[in-house]
Length: 99
Length: 483
Image (cartoon, rainbow over all chains, first blue to last red; front, side, top):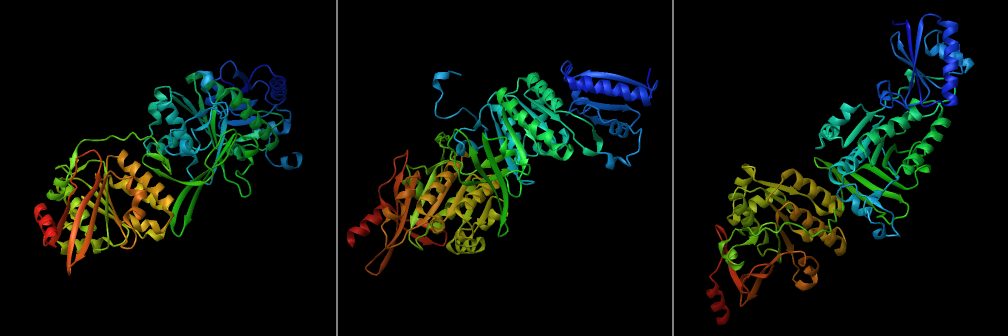
């Protein structure tokens, strides 16, 4: 079962930041990608070796594994506009003003 | 480690294993703390850090983790392999772990709050995996290019260095030199334990690498700038005050090139890997004696490196040919190499450095420096003596037999001009010209020669069309009685 949007959220433990990021991601996906996405949460505290594969440095990091190319978005995903740009769901233009 | 044996005034040190660096830091980097190494591009900071890790893993049983933000792991391995480090092997043996963290701003979108916990998790995981005691972060400032929120970054770096200290990790953190500060991002504010600065300067077309310990909390350290070399053996910081007098002392003997002189030296000549001082006034035959020595060494198939501080190689070869010693043929056979330099061209340290390099390159069995007295003009006698000590240490460690010629002035006493260097020498030979009754007598004697019975005679010698020839001992004595 491969979804069109294969997303992976890296976190380290059950931190408020991690919970916030997951909640924000769910909300955005339900609004913009309903039925076309899958989310896998990777806790690096449990699986530290997994951090290497996706070159994880900052946390939380959202990785768009599909569709290609791979995209990375770091932070608690509180800025919906930026998340949408990062996922290529919104063109980059017009963002400068917003940020 | 037994706690009661720790020197309370000085903190514990983690040796780098880099020749010379452990001397100027009196033992190495602060153990269990981060050290900042700053320098411009190509200044050797990555190599310094890698040497620290590799030596730690190989010599001090301290596995290391290399986190690189710069190159990818393969490129890095290739780079250091050219300097004789086989990272792959160490990685295989679980003595080293290389983690490449790629940061590219164009690939990363930032939204909201984040931290660098990912780095911490990876670092901790890597450290645990191989039981690392040492860590290198190269070059941490790359993060400033990769992430936009410098506020978060700074707070996280501060946390990282604290984390390293808490985990008792000896770390080398490399950083780019800044315009005003030691590092571009002012990282020296966070790492206050030790700061080392590297420099690569070109002055009058001569490039010299220099290293300086800017700060070392809780420890004394050499404050000067010291030249260092990067060659096939990695980094060497000068002075190499290898204060350990632990050279091999071979009992093998090598000929002086003159059977009659060998006779005076316990019948067998010099010891291999010993040092010979050849003193004499101008025109007394020092260079010719050196040429005989070189000639004999090359005839045995050994490699010679001849440092000239007065003449050009062509001049020396021509003069020796007319004196009856042909060294040209050894040059052609590749056994004899010259290294000619005006002493006044650079400072002593640079000379020392170049000698090191030349010796490393030529890998000779025999070295001649002719005349070392010319170097005296460059520095004070103390400096020259210190430099010669280092040269001699270096040559002895390599098993090189070395001959130094020294020009004695006719007005000053021998003791005055040479007492300071003669003690460094194993054998001291004096050549002199005595003028009596309108006759010039050339004389040679062995003033000292450690570890062998040597002749106390003063022998006469003459120049023939085959170089120097010592006259029979009795004849010399008879002559003196007559006069």
